[in-house]
Structure formats: structure tokens, C-alpha cells
Image 1 (cartoon, rainbow, N blue to C red):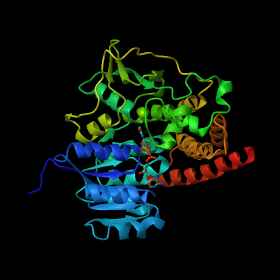
Image 2 (cartoon, rainbow, N blue to C red; image 1 turned 60 degrees about the vertical axis):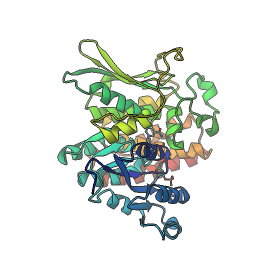
Image 3 (tube, protein in one colour; image 1 turned 120 degrees about the vertical axis):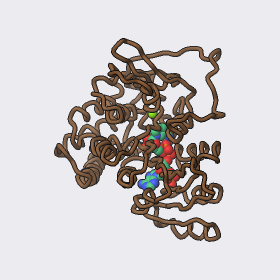
Image 4 (tube, rainbow, N blue to C red; image 1 turned 90 degrees about the horizontal axis):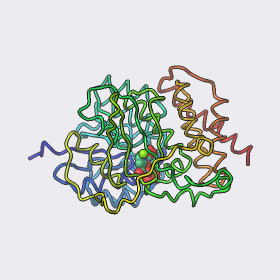
Length: 389
Ligand code: NDP
Ligand code: MG
């Protein structure tokens, strides 16, 4: 007999940091969640291992050169194996899928997310770049198809939780930021930081791209844009506050001056679980705050001179249209170039700024316009990097 409470989850990016933690949440509640679709880009062995353990209906290996390897390894298992970017757009639409958790990195999440929304699937959104690139389009589609967009990002989950049960206007959103590994560095010290230093985040263990974005605070800039679209608030009502301990995950200030926030240990499984189980909260075995162990909860102003990417995100929302799409694509190129030591840490902001100046502004982009803008931006950003080095 089918368990009617059981939610069948499609995890886009099951081999990543968010994807593997989502599988841990599913393992905690085998009576409530089933991993129905798992997908990876190229980490074939991990995908095979996950398929054997979680027994999904199907898996997608996006990298086509790994298809035969995965298919052969799973030949004796009752699982269908697909490949290619197009397959990601199709599996999200499978009839039994109850919720799609988007944990792909960067622009690659946009088309599968749109495809899932069009099929009416609720979205648990980790892939913030989708909202950064095309927030207006995505939120419009969600309204049209009556699809809930449930935040997985810890800050946005905290804001979402602070808003539960509230009917009054929001005065301000307080978006907390850890400040990353370079919070206390001077501008001079930032000039020669290495990818290895940037990849050591003080509080969170995440994928490489977002870890570099956290070090440059581009991630916080993206989260401002994400909050703007998720909660329909003007950017000047979103205040970034550096809170190095990452215990207050974000807060909302109301018009009577009351501030409601959500606190907890830095553990992504908490917001992932809530996005899957909403509106219920489920029991968990994840670590609790030990109040006697909390020495300080401190708050600082972000340094706009050191972390220019944060300001650039505010600028991109003010510009609207394709501006945030350009910032996102230029950042993806610069972020990768920094990891490959083809671009210095502080140059990432220059690349984004110069690319933004070179691509023509477009007011109301369609999906095709976003796809074209993303490709064009990558060419220009790479050109800028190559002329610098
Ligand atoms: P990871 O790099 O750890 O994982 C990314 C996943 O997406 C992997 O499964 C990867 O496959 C797959 N993938 C990457 N590129 C492609 C592509 N082009 N086509 C198909 N699949 C692809 O990233 P994270 O889990 O850290 O982050 C995922 C998203 O969640 C990002 O948007 C990030 O900003 C957001 N997020 C992450 C947080 C975290 O704590 N990690 C916190 C808040 C938000 P493969 O393994 O084969 O490479
Ligand atoms: Mg976050």
C-alpha cells in the first residue's frame, strides 16, 4: 500500500554539499521521504553509490561522457539512468515527484527549476543563483503555477521562519553574514590571498564555488537579491549585518520595533529538513545550542571597501533587467578563474564591474534573453581575465 504521507523528492545535485545533507535528512525520516530522483554532474562513483543505497527510480549523470560507466555499474539495479542537461529538465516533471530540491551550482539550475515550476512541483530552493539571475521571471512563474518556493539557504529559512504567523508589514530584514575567512584582513592582506585560504570557511563546510563567494561576500550580495525576490522587499530594507558566530541565522524587524530571528547551530540540515517537511517541523538528532558554551554573539558593519561585490549586488537590483544575470555570469567566470589561479582575489570584483559596463542593459528579459546574456557575459568576462593576466 502506498504511504500517502510519503514525499518523493527529486534532488538536483545529490552529490554536492547540500545534496548529500538532503540525503542525510531523508535517512532520518525513511517513513516520510523517499529519494525518487538523484542527479550529478560528473561525480559518477558517488552517484552510483547513492543509487545503490537509496534506490531511486532514476538518476541523471549530466556529463554525457560518464553515461555508459554509470549505466553499466547500475545494470543490475532497478534504476533508470539518463544523461545530459535536457534530462534534468525532464526528470523534475515526473508525475510521482512531490518536491524538487534544487542544489545545482550557478546558472545550470535555471532551466530545470523553470521546468519543475511549469509542472507544478513545489521547489525547495538552495540554488540561489536561479533567483539572482531571473528573480522576476521565477517568482512570476511560481505565482502563475501556484508553486511554493521554500528557502533552503539558512538566512532565508530564518527570515521565512520569522515571518511565520505574521500578517503585518516588515520594516527591515536583518541578513546576517559570517564575514568569511577574510573578515579581519586588511585590503593589503587581501591582495595575495590564495584559493586554499579562501576555501577554509570558519563556520560552514560547503561546495567550492559558494565558499569562494562567501570569502568575497558576493554570496551575501546574492542573498540580498534572493531575499528581495523571496520576500518581495525593497533592497534598501535589507540590512547586512556581520555576525561571525553564525548562530543568529537572520531576523525580521517589524514596524513596532520588535525583532524576530531564528537561532541554531550552523547546520544546513535544519533548513533543508524544514523545506521538505513544511508546514510541519520534524524531530531531529542534529546538534543543539549549548547556551553555556556560547561566549559571544557579536555584530559588525560589513566593510564596503574590502568587499565590493556586496555593493555590486545592491547596484544590480537597482539597475534591474539583465544586470544581476550579468553579475552572476561574470562572477561564475571570475570565481573559477580565481580557483584556477588565473585571477587574483580582489580582481574578481574588477572583472564583474567591467563586464557589467560592457554588456548592453535589457529591461524585461525573456528566458531566451537570459540564456543569451549568460553566454555573452561569459565570453566578455573571460576576455577581461585573459587581458589582465
Ligand atoms: P556543490 O558544488 O557541493 O554541489 C553541486 C551539485 O550540483 C553537485 O551534485 C554537482 O555534481 C552538481 N552540478 C554542478 N554543476 C552542474 C551542472 N552544470 N549540471 C548538472 N549538475 C551540476 O555545491 P553546494 O551543495 O555547496 O551548493 C549547491 C547550491 O546551494 C548552490 O547554488 C549554493 O549557492 C547553494 N547553497 C549551498 C549551501 C551550502 O552549505 N553548501 C548553503 C546555501 C546555499 P558533481 O558532484 O558531479 O560535480
Ligand atoms: Mg546562506
